Length: 273
Image (tube, rainbow, N blue to C red; front, side, top):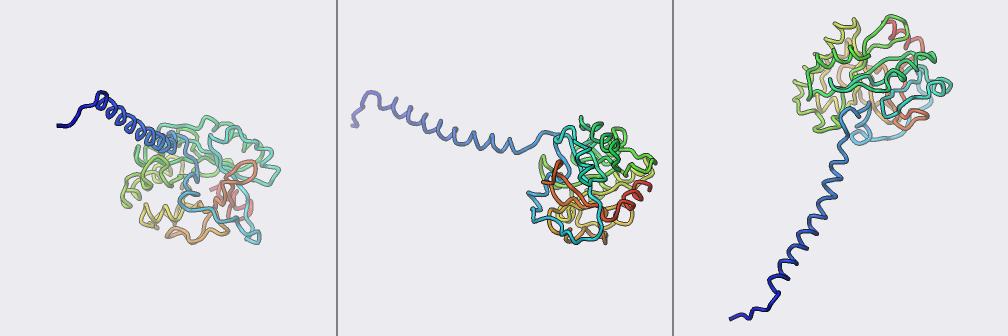
């Protein structure tokens, strides 16, 4: 018969509790770290997923054909020093206006009007979240909250920013066919509201993955390609050239810098429609 020693059961229970507590302490920081990597709704911005998904491999070659420098901004940049950017050679700008049907940029007025006031040609962009509401609903929300167009010679057509989902699955849980349909609804509604074809901002790798490399929008919608490298690389299907190129997220004054594929008169031509 085994000899029962006083306190043995208690010590075993204490040891078990300590082991469980240690295991819990190891898992909690990991859970918190995972939660911390998911941004708050509304905080997304143009090119947010490019470095993680598409890499960062240099800057454009200085010998490229004539191009015009631009920037794109969102709420995380706050009030922008537009005179500084203008004096550095930046001649056009896009400001984030909306996201989904639940968010408007609180700095939009300063960013959108401030760029215009220093002499830039400006426009607005919408960060798409195809998993929250339909394309038509988001286009209407965009137009109703700063994304419209005016025939003043200095306002660019609106941009559909369609890229990696910062809040979940890369393709927002949609098949390629469903994604193409969503984009078409947005573009058709935007044109019906403004008379202009929206610009499509995307990255080739995302477009290939999430639309099946659909080429049907290229004939009407200008392409703004995202690629942080010495050249734009392969473009999405249908587009033989790009209109704008976001080439870095670490530029001077404002991180996101862009090239317009042409001299300033071509920027003006796009604004004029």
